Image 1: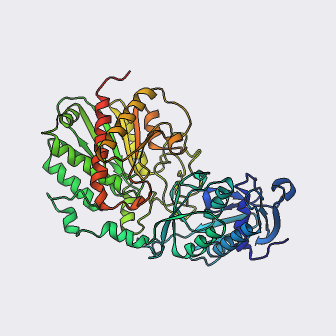
Image 2: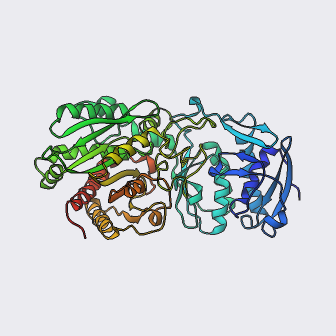
Image 3: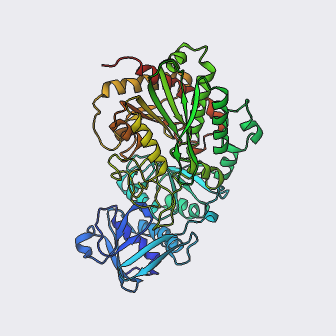
Amino acid sequence: MPLRGSPAALLPLCLLCLPAGLPLRGPRYHGRYAGYLWELNQYDASEKCDKGGSSSHVGGVTEKTEVQVCLPSAALHNKQEFSLLCALVPATAQEELGATASHGESIRGSGSDVEMDNKETENNEEMFCNSSDKVIRIVPDSERETQILKAVFNRLKVDLWQPSSTSYIAEGTVTDLRVPHNTSQILLPSLQQANIQYTILISDLQKAIEKQTGRRSQRNRRSFPGYNYEVYHSLDDIQGWMHHLNKTHSDLIHMFSVGKSYEGRTLFVLKLGKRSQPYKKAVWIDCGIHAREWIGPAFCQWFVKEALQTYQTDPAMRKMLTQLYFYIMPVFNVDGYHFSWTNDRFWRKTRSKNSRFRCHGVDANRNWKVKWCDEGASVHPCDDTYCGPFPESEPEVKAVAHFLRKHRKQIKAYLSFHAYAQMLLYPYSYKYATIPNFSCVESAAYNAVNVLQSAYGIRYRYGPASSTLYVSSGSSMDWAYKNGIPYAFAFELRDTGHFGFLLPETLIKPTCTETMLAVKNITLHLLKKCN
């Protein structure tokens, strides 16, 4: 039977064809859902839709554009589920796709050109959440649930925490998402109605944010020399700390710049090590590629602190700093990290501007020139996994890639720190394949997770990123390995979702203490011959 409603309200329903693998053809509509470039046109429902699916024509997205709504039976098993999606999608679509949408999005164009314009303004990107915003976890236990969740999440205003894209959602995949107050009032009862189980991880997101950052005074956070390593620090604090160490520990520390960010901030790196010989092997460590993962920069600072404090008393540390240099970049994505402190706590990407869309930023871990913008990366500028207009389009990525290329013969290990999942990953991320030096890398990872667990009993999974986490292209780890750095690892630090990106400051010390053991173990592994 025909579906009735405004074109803007009914338009997203046609995307239910996507989970069933049904191609859409015709005039292009550029939208922000799931990173697809959708092509909408009328087509033969008997050919393209699953047997038993429903379809209807909705005219007038623009004067000359006609859209056919296709509801495949693979995703919708009964009238109740159809009602669920009808309840969820049209109301949200009217808000998100309407000409006067609350986030400034509008459909404009004529004839065959219909384009989404996402007017992202500073006023809409707020640091704080509604007190009723929540984080929930869903683990789909069937293909039916997987398809429904993908369809619904692509339409509702939800922020996926884990995995990073709806494309990764599959049966049995742990799926954590931030749900704004208005959306949760629709989503949660509807999930119950469809018998899709969920767990509330964080019931009051604003309170959790305040609890994470408001425990100590600013003076206690950044005063020198009593710098507090058990709290999170702003970008200004971290860069001030770097300048201070450069002055006070000139025998072991040398600070330098590898370039400028998109917004003009200096990209500082610390070179740590004893100037004992003219040429030494080196280890690169970066933190904060993704802005909201604050535990990363906290660890980079912790590593430097431990190195300076234990160099005289710990034989292993003395050996490391005597025989190796460490290049440490505490905050890779400086613009995004600053933005996560001032505007949007859960910002992930860089802050570059797109000339065609008004969405900001690129995923700095999808922007490297290794299988760029393939599986696991999005072509759409509004998506969290947007790969960028071209490889190394981001000044931050370009600057670090240039430095690593220049020093590739010296650098023997690349370590990048992320959150959250409690994993130690190594190449490949972009394909299911075994790296040539698998036995040496796997041995280093095995020993590292074991020594990490010895501290507090925290278990890390380890293995190739593609099979242990998910397939993703354009990552820094794969790029480093493909450019001749034999040991390339990505840490996904604590936790596994109870706190997610809001890991409390009380857990900084244990997280960094156990991670320090793993990093030392990997580093000492480099100094041995591995056959």
